[in-house]
Amino acid sequence: MAMRLGFSAWAMPAMPLADQIQLVADCGYGAIELVGGESPNALNPRTVTDAEVRDIRRRIDDAGLALPSIACHGNLLLPDPAARADEKARVVAAMDLAASLRGPDGAPCVVTMAWGTPDADDATRRRIVEAFIELGEAAAARGVVVAIEPHVGQALDLPDRVQAVLDAVGSPAVRLNFDNSHFEVMGCHAADYVPLLARYAVHTHLKDQRGIAPAYEFLVPGEGDFDYAAYLPMLAAAGYDASLTVEISKMVQNRPGYDPHEVAARSFAVLDGAVRTSGVAVAPAHKERHA
Image (cartoon, rainbow, N blue to C red):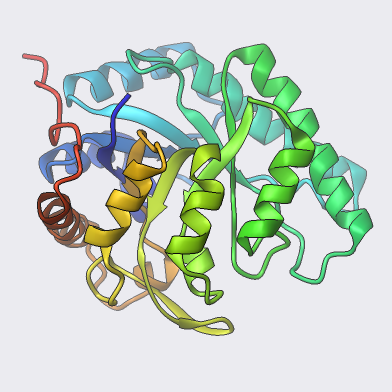
């Protein structure tokens, strides 16, 4: 494994999957995060066929990309049992898809959130732990990992809360999607949360940000003042060696004239510059593409 710059298909909801893969490769990235969902251009883990899975794997390989993750969120705290079971079934289906898409670097992790609210009581936090114990058992049975994504405005919005849940779950099949932007808009500092949490991380989301919750804004890398050239060595020193995946928020996508290709190219330039400035070892932009 090695750190590698990636880009998430989350930024390209209106594009067919084949075009998403091509865009990421064309911009120079070495990895793509796919999105599992039920919108028209999402990769629906409950309906994808074996033939489609083989085609996806071929396209990713031909583009010279790694597949470190599939984002597929399911709210396991819904009060209605049937709705909650349906949400869980979607995440488990994404695990099956991840196992089917296993490549040279192994199976992609499945990124999902914990939901809840920052004022969650002890009973709700126990429910989160129980839900991820169940997901961890399902993931382990399939040889994959589920990665919890912290999120501002949810129960796991602060580093210590994330650590508490991961330790309570206690499963190597339940790890962390290290999206530090959510900690940043909570007023946390990288020098504190990187040593605390990097050892749990199997995937990383990167985006820029401005302000402190509730008055905050997620941005394209380089639009804010976050110092990636200082952040990347912190991750490396903490032993992180997986993908560094740009995630473009809905806040940016909702801008008039939003162009995912322009944003992907601009993000790559910023992060590639940070890599060069920091001297951190990152795998080449992409593997040699198949002829």
